[in-house]
Length: 359
Image (cartoon, rainbow, N blue to C red; front, side, top):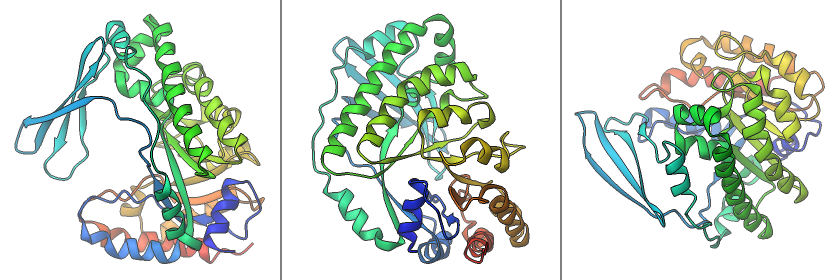
């Protein structure tokens, strides 16, 4: 079985010869210490070539930067709408660290109404780069087309977690209007891609912004499942499959991912950082969702190779008894700058344990 066929079978809920093994690859930018790990994973693990084709017109935003400190610049974005301007800001690291959002476009009902004055974005453009990516990855894996943020994640990002939480109690109807608009934005983009043969594998994120512990199961269903289900249905009707990346306390909502129709779920974290064990996740997802995970990323830096082997064996034992639906993977991309050679033995241990697995 080729690596491509194995991943395809994971997404389509078919029997496997062994679990797949994969790692997300958003390495620290410009860090050559990870070059050996890149080469090792390219040779020995299942690969996903992410594709983020820009086929929808970008909103009219002007961006400027100004000094903030020795380590940060402040980036200010001004969104121009027919009803007026909205402003957001974030800190951008000068040391290669992740950015920090500070203020958001929507801070209440008035801003939401201003945002909704925007016309629906036009859709168009070439998608040939998707098929080039698919050819390039070849038998080593699959090309996965990004849907971007789901409607809930997009709206939560516009508001920020605090404003979204407050409006979920004071102005729920306004949030639903925003969510309906973003659902239609995603559907328009997705229809364009499907009509041009992009797929069958798609990826989406953003559900974690409205998931436990930030929000309870009712909000998860009302703001995620309700608006994601038409997106999943459209993908399935076209013969496609959908991967979801969602951190959080999954025990309370993993059944809702099944209801939503998700095909692959990453990373279903166990205690202490999560609340669902591999066995519990398998019980909820069996035959419906392929589980991708769940080696905590810090373990790739803090554990020994033998400890990683033990974790991988335990994961396979708990979640691969039916020879379906498991992609062994860390919970996130490698992330510590300059530590590529330090984590390499742990990644090798993870991959080798999967490759050496026998029923």
